Length: 321
Image (cartoon, rainbow, N blue to C red; front, side, top):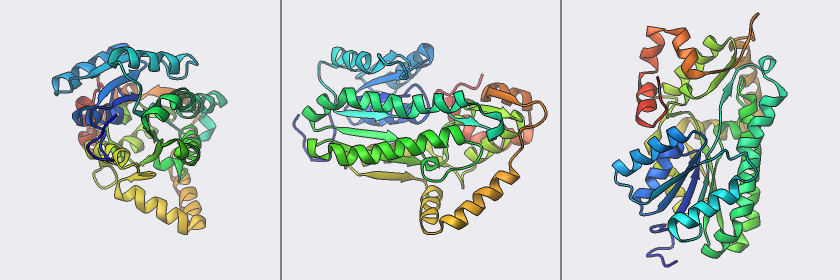
């Protein structure tokens, strides 16, 4: 495909997983604004339909969607076939963004929580990459793997998530080395906290109300979190320029650098953080949706703290009831 610049992706065909809401939706919008034809993918068909209508209303003309569970072994073939059928061309850009956040102490987690996180955030991207490589080789395409700051610094009370994100970051770096000879670039994205409304979609275990309170507050504070639209723009620019890695937010960059030069001190700080966070409690709950916990908590103070993130939830299709 002809390009006006070696960095431009205008007119390409893109597939974005986990794109019905939040960062995935915003990445899809950024790609669409650059002239890409975009296939959306998520599990919830109704949410996905809203996302497609939202993008069309915002001027993204070439957008289609397919509801599917990326952990299904048949999902890669279904997605690639649907993309070819919708746009009449092979893939130029693959964005692996689908994920899930589980918050709570280790004592409240099960082995199934860890297996589910790995299936969604490691094995599903792996299967999709393996299926897409022939098309991406033909187009000298781009792969974008959204990991997390948690894929470099293992924050407590997020163990299933950070374990899967560490694996995803390692896979992404290895894929870059393996696929460079085929002309395929691989960009690893390490976001810190972002104001996407993710606190409404996360699931909470242990003392769910207290876990929700700290996570929702941290995710919405301007100093700690990043504007999601800026983050999406940075991701797409990194993909255009075939950058190996992009770390989103100054706080995340500082944390990664500090962990690299002072790992022992980082470990002590994380241990202290774990001691300050809630314990499992006498009657621990398991995997309670954020929307439900928010209704249970019903705190005016917390609502004030999370106001920016609650607004983001409405804007970016993370429904708040």
